[in-house]
Image (cartoon, rainbow, N blue to C red; front, side, top):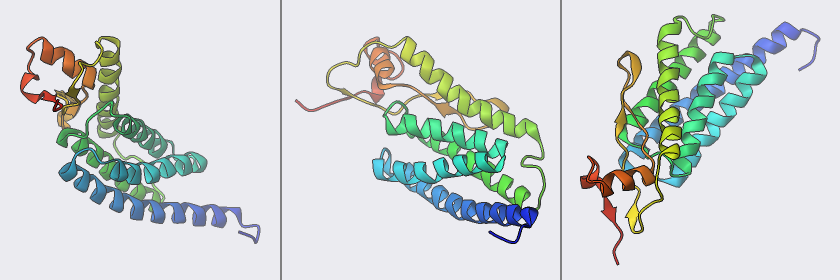
Length: 195
């Protein structure tokens, strides 16, 4: 962009980012709804992952740190889903849809040249929900036993989330196997591969 009017150039770049992000977030929301219907689907997860990663990178470049932080948390959890560490349950999908809504709201505020977040309390609660899933994931890794032979990953249980947000499930397959073997609450969710 030429002409030496840096403010106008910056505003044009910001407007382009917001327009593209809005379009991508609408697609991602529809993909999450599809993922909820299909369960684990690598193609859908990868189609969601790419725009979230792009939004994170571009927002950092533009100095939109709330957008960057939230998209980073979403990217991190999506990567755990891609690696089969977290199952995409309806509660997890709901958490992601809350994240998409928050990002879209931030885009609307940015378009109006307002601060990214009007009220930090709901934003912080959403961030805490994403971090609770990750914290539970790390805790499960630290206390898990090796996966039972023949036991497939089952949908995880839910973890309470702050501020009335949807529960966030986060159980790794090894922890599911350990609880199932111990006769825990997940016994009914256990799936055994055919011999």
